[in-house]
Amino acid sequence: MDTPQVALLGYGEVGHILAAGLAGKVRLRVYDPAYPPGDTVAASNADAAASEADAVVVGSEADAVVVGPEADAVLVASNAEAVRGADVVIAVTTGADSLAACAESRPHLGSGVLYADLSTGAPGDKRRIAELLEPSGAAVVDGAIMAPIPLRGLATPILASGPSADRFAAFAGGLGMSVTPIGGSPGDAAARKLLRSVLVKGLSALAIESQRAAREAGLEGWFWEHLLETVTAADEEFVVRLIKGAGQHGVRRVHEMEAATRMLDELGVPSTMTRATTATLDEVTRTGIPPIPGT
Image 1 (tube, rainbow, N blue to C red):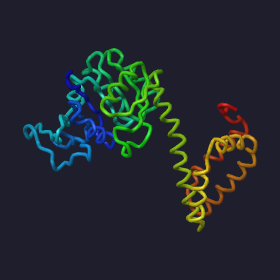
Image 2 (image 1 turned 60 degrees about the horizontal axis):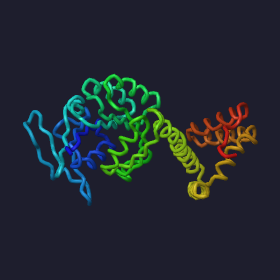
Image 3 (image 1 turned 180 degrees about the vertical axis):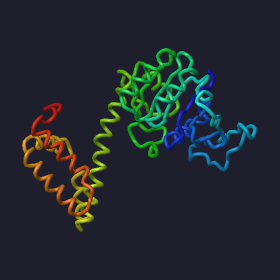
Image 4 (image 1 turned 45 degrees about the vertical axis):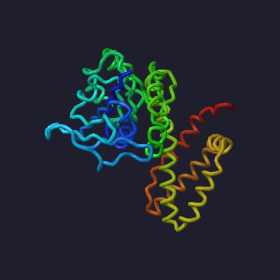
């Protein structure tokens, strides 16, 4: 069987890591307007990614590319050059650039080509990509990267939705990627990713704001230990109590958070998350809490 040709759109942090893992396993063409031909695409070894120092320049000065050791991977000068003739297109652009990358790719895609958009985009954007590519006959997959990719490289968990999710999962799994198909439609994987983002990034912002306030209050060490204790002890009972308590004691908690906001203002600490918490709890007093599964 011929080695598949893969186009990788986007060569930022995620693109670099995927390129290093895929180079040498597929015929890889990488396009990112920020990385013109001549930059390095390095293949990964069992021990470590190949170093740029071992790369060699191939081609004339005008169209030179740099090929990593053991790799058939090149940086190309245009989207068209990357996707033309590809069996699979993996888009890891920013979410803001995903629709533009799709539109640029469309005229050059063959029927049946797998187009997997792994960008962090809204579900509506993923559905729009599917609509744009439908006339081309491409098989569109909505992919959502569910953990920081620098930690696990190709093995980073990815959810895939859409009618061709199983096909993409099988292809990617053969290359060492960890893709779980969930069926459904384009946008379903993105929705799961962004719901997780609401939670995890929200927790991150809360931790930053509260730790800043603790430092200004001279309670940095105490609060850090309290933060770790609270997070470590969290379980289902704790989460249910958080939600139900907001419904049962909403008015009192709004007053409490208003006091917390005044404290942060006095400390000179921006209270963005604290004010948002106050507004959310105030809304709960009028609309109630969301249903809790299983209760």
